[in-house]
Amino acid sequence: MKGKTRSLPVSYRLAVTSRVLAAVLGGYIVAALASVSLSLWVPMPRADAVVTGMMISFLVYLGAVIWCFACRSAARAWFGMLVPSLVLAAVAGLAYWVGHS
Image (cartoon, rainbow, N blue to C red; front, side, top):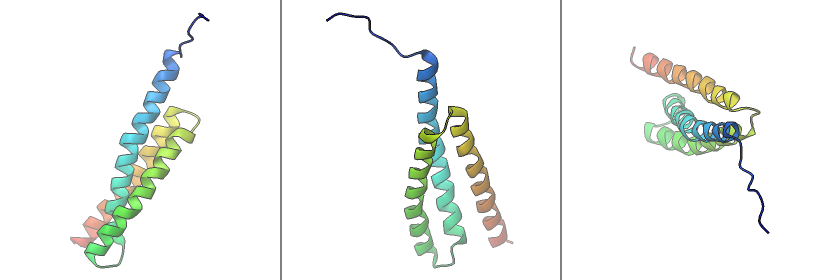
C-alpha cells in the first residue's frame, strides 16, 4: 500500500533536539557540579567523599535526564538545568573559598 509519508514538523524536531542537548550537556554539568559540591562538603575522608560524590552524581544525572523529557517545554528543561547548575556552582565555590581562607 503506497501512501503519503507523514513527516514531523521542523519545530517538533528542534524541540526534541533541544531536550536531548539539555539532557546530555545540562545533565552532565549538573551531575559534575553535584559531585564536586558533595565531595567538598561531605564530612568524611577526602577519598571517600570523592567516591560518594561520584556515585551520587549518577543518580543526579538520571534525574536530570528524566526532568528534561518530563517538562512541558524545551525552555523549561533548559531552565531546569541552568538553575541547579548555578546553585551547585555557588555551593562548590563557597566550599572552595571557605576551605582556602
